[in-house]
Image (tube, rainbow, N blue to C red; front, side, top):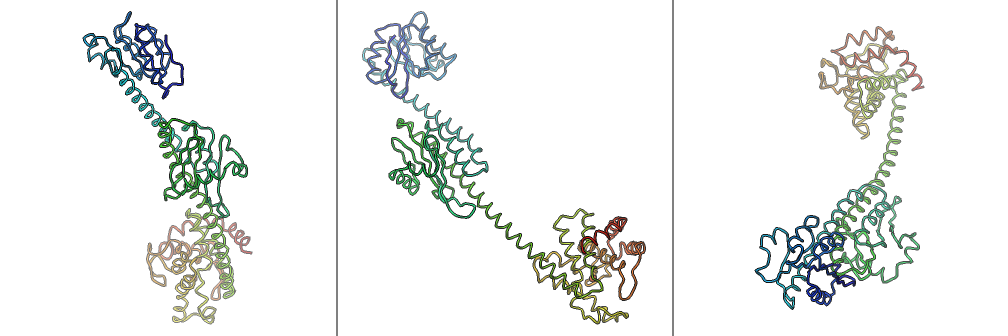
Length: 505
Ligand SMILES: [Fe+2]
């Protein structure tokens, strides 16, 4: 057996199979001159075994051999290997196997033996080109698969440092390198300052201070050039990939030490790297946006908290004004507010709706502030003119509250709290569904508390009489569903009284 044990050119391994040692010698001279790795073998049966164990890329095979011919050798090899590139050598053209056999066995080429092997040399060269191309395609395909597999991982929302580490970890197997780093600029930190962040792997796995000392001025210059030109930089020892986001801004670089690979490998490798870098840049940008959203969310939370405090202050201030105006009904608004929320809860209203009801209950009579005291506190029977004046308080209340934007949901409730289902209420004489549901709740709560309290013009009713009045008005003055729910709840009236005393003392 003849062998040329040198570093194989293009990593191509060739097997020559011919039962004439002289032919192997002649071919060896040609292959040696071209710098290829080869082995020669004279026994066709051994050749089949050799292919099983030797990971050859190309086989030059004699046709007429004993104990089996070349076509039988190919047939046996094709049972376990479909990728081996096979060139068949024939004697006289009349002795060549039929074309159908050559096609059926996937033999890539054949030529007649001659002394000079010029034709064979051309076939070998073109075979090697095909093999190299197939390898490139396969590597490219595998690399793309790896990128596609890694994309979900790098897109998961996680801290930016972790994303950078994942990007490097997924990258290195693609470029057969162990040393790399990723540098990203202008990250907006939680305190809104801008900073750079890096992650290294292999010899670049270091703290930021040590890391910076590893970069000489020329390397820094090349990194700067890659970022500015937005072009990949490839030298014999390194690849610098700019990270370009969707807005076509340079957000950093990936630096990879390369291993002096052949031109083909670098060309194919950097195409993969470019695809990967664009995926990486997108995921980094996403992480930035996510952290920006977090910062804005925190700002919003702070603003919201301030707004909430202002809202509560405003309610308290207004409440004191209302209480000061009418000492006699002091506590009425608090109780109405309490009943409103209780009824709202029984109807499974949302937290926001309950808060609106609470405020509506507190300020349902705020419009009475602008009614003259001599009418409001008159103990004698009111004249029609005076009563009409009193009836303006829902509209006046709605106007007062509409000045404050945070009460915009409360305004229609206050305006409609004296409307009746049968249309005989005021100020607009709305009917049934025209009346906002929360206003129907306030109407029942307001009427009940009024009946349960002493007024200038009458004494309070007892609980059963008040419940009876609600039942009488159900479906005409009041919404029947609200009355029904509220009356059920009034089975616990004692408990409610205690809660009111506890809450508003
Ligand atoms: Fe009222």
